[in-house]
Image (cartoon, rainbow, N blue to C red):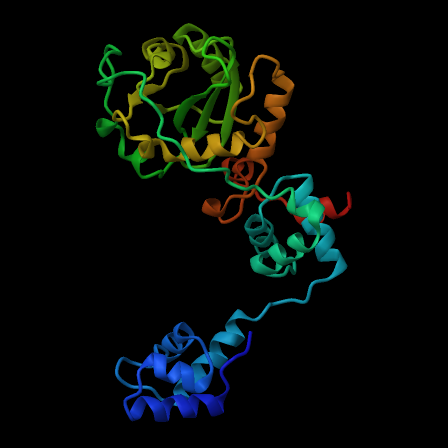
Length: 322
């Protein structure tokens, strides 16, 4: 795409001064009207100075310039973490920056990936629009002794400490079949996944107790939706030592961390497929993958690193495997 030159900017300045509008200037200079509009906005409203606009253009160009030239070593790192670890381009760039390892920009990583068709297939792409989830309860009050999310501790609301968990259930093709039970820490994004034989509260409770027993962090509070599968909340409190709270009906955003995590899990267990044949080993492998994936919200530390308070050099470690 052609860039506006300094000479053309002087021409634009002259045309602005004599009262030409953006459309007329675009016709004269030979650029799209939207390009001229953005160019004029480089200077304060009602005034356009070619030298000022050109200086801003050069400064932006310098700031946006690719920090490094792509090297074969960078390409190997991109391939490794995209294919073997399911990292996104942003996670690859962010983690390299965190470790002080040279890497091209996120946009540069995307360009490289799209230039190699077999790599592009490994990108995580959102399929379709999210559908509104149906509530399992008309008014959300059929579960006895439920505590509303609005009295949840401040530490849970503001994510100031580890141990405040969001819960959910991921279903397959049939209502009366195995389901995945998910738990994610609001602060660290540490994730646990279990298998329940059905969506009944008894089976879900059994899965949750197993998940809590192997958790690397304590469960101080749990927050769930109003589905009947969480009618076991009193038993869960007694068994695990946590306090259970319930989100408002039709308010999935109140458990946004869990909703997002379920989307990541669906990459491995897609909608429309039965959960009956899923083995626990496969579930634990996905769990490990998610917990060892750097997160932007954690400054590109992984959840495991965050809860242990120690960052490893993933780039250096994995170079030995390339």
